[in-house]
Image 1 (cartoon, helix red, strand yellow):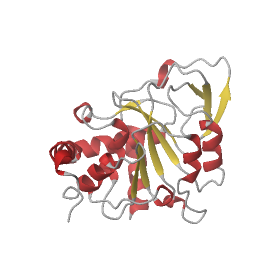
Image 2 (tube, rainbow, N blue to C red):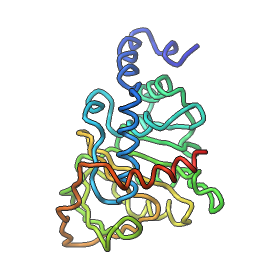
Image 3 (cartoon, rainbow, N blue to C red):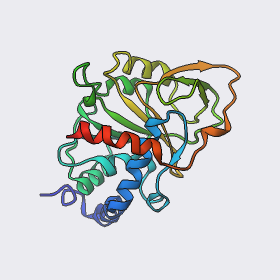
Image 4 (cartoon, rainbow, N blue to C red):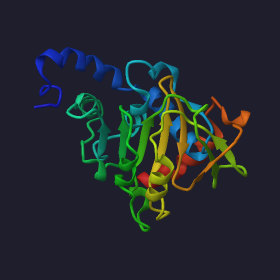
Length: 238
């Protein structure tokens, strides 16, 4: 029996429509993949998912839908008691649903609590590729009440950002989750309109006051940085 067949009949039609929308075409999946790579290669800059995948499916689910397969454990953080999007992802990708602590790919369709971030799989010093990627929804990537200063690989000097809709205590929780570098977790922040920003485990994030967000933080293209990382990711997957 498939996951879709286990959905109550009253919800089956709606779920089937969601599954159809969640089954990305190859070109769509490649566009999402490139956006993810570019976001993680250039922390704090803003890239975009392809416009033709925005709408029915929450933006935060797109990396999972593009990257998951039979060998990738996934977890969707939903409202208590709901498995709606978990079922959609499972049917659309054939990826197994696993507990949050074991997931290689995770996404949230509800606000994330800060204490959930350290629960993510971090891999080990010998196998950092086993660390999870989590995409969480935010309301905006600028204008938030707290400014963060980013530094590290892929950041020329320093870059200031101020996302809206992140959980209270996010910076501290993330620091715990990446404290054993190269083990750690990689995070993506996605807005409803398909903009995405990456915070890889190699990035240092500090809270600052009076930071000014630079104009070059907004970048709607995905190109050289994605190409540079694609070979690395492909090698790890092999």
